[in-house]
Length: 544
Ligand code: SAH
Ligand code: SF4
Ligand code: F3S
Image 1 (tube, rainbow, N blue to C red):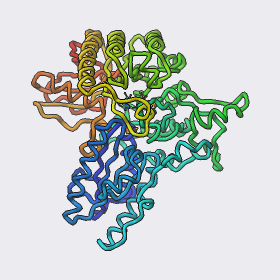
Image 2 (cartoon, rainbow, N blue to C red):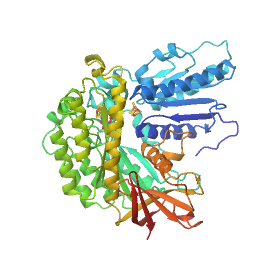
Image 3 (cartoon, helix red, strand yellow):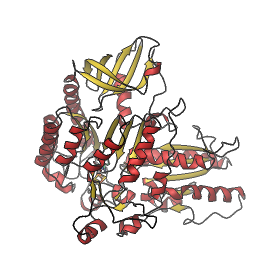
Image 4 (cartoon, protein in one colour):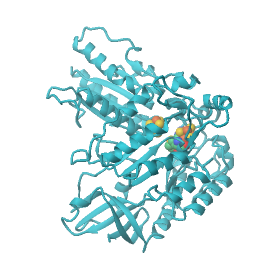
């Protein structure tokens, strides 16, 4: 670790969007800290302000744009500050953002984050020359993949410096300052699915799979440093597939590899029999076996198609892999699923769920739905409601369709469901889901569960939560799960005494009343709990 100098440049970093972005922010933080930057939680004084942005829905972009105005004010007041927009919105907007938001100094897409420190350094150098110094060209101020990431079909193209960023991750031992018990590990970057509504294949580029050796090593080092729970990340995590021997560097080490859909299909035709492949099931089994001191292993997001019995078999046989599956269905209407290009029917989704419960009777399933997709009729929507009623979803994130530039849907289909209808469908589906969630949580009452204790609340005062996802970013956008926690808390009775809060392997949030002053040592531990009660979003229990 580098010494932190009192005059070290300060950085404020705010993260929007998904877990991928949270992980990217953590890696950026590590890389910049190693270069001597100091992270602070005050955007009004930071020398460098970075927004790690999301483009998945228009609303997500609005949040980031509103922040840019705040920094413009600082600049107008004559302050020297570097403003960087990084992540998916930088990639989607491209250099046009410089024109529309002249206060933005630099842009860096999610596939180019290894170049971010350089961009920042260069901008700082130019700024230090004073107001009259020429501004760097737009090219010199941006690192964007453009179409490159989708055009590259060679395996060599995947042998990128970005991998170094994942590998450069800092492994701090758990202590009072870092308090990290949960961590993300990326297994796949990008996406090849091209669901018609979705920007991610454009912003994150082609699917690239990291070599299993690197992934296992990263998990091992995190577990060594005290991490209790690892969540593997990918947009379609179960499509992970690594063909050994196809992408080896001159140093003999395996490199990231373009996934099925592009180069890999071509190379698999070339590859002869006997080539060894690591599938997602193999990868799970390897991590479980080779990192025995990791207590919990989970993964998001699963694609409902091709979720094979091989994966379910590994989950059944490996006790430390959590029986939790987040596999968005998106719609309950075959016609809409087809327009979405999701590649499965409602029947196939139901068969998938049936298979999950055959293998894992205790599993919890969660997902996402989009309401108001172009041309969605009342009948289509009723089919979605019926699907949600039919499956014991622990929870579903429900989104109103938002047309996104660069997607197929915005070009081909008119956004013809009125906003009022989208809102009404959103609320109705939420009500149905709340009832389903209530039943799911109720079904656990009377049972014993293991809970990873993460937060403590006492006398209505919420202590700093434990867990990398929640506490590390200044004013971080909370992990969707923690938003649920907040909501659930707001709905619970005023607190008396002290409560511990954690999650079961199935990701059910559990609240435990404990005597005053007894919680200190238990945070970050997994404890057995008897479930004594429930509400739509919570289990209540007592420590055993
Ligand atoms: N890779 C994951 C999802 C990533 S995006 C998967 O395929 O399941 C997270 C969620 O945002 C999606 O599941 C979808 O429900 C929602 N979403 C994506 N694009 C959207 C759009 N244009 N409008 C509304 N919701 C959208
Ligand atoms: Fe988007 Fe579909 Fe890829 Fe998920 S699978 S990231 S929804 S294109
Ligand atoms: Fe958003 Fe990009 Fe994630 S668009 S959801 S931050 S992959």
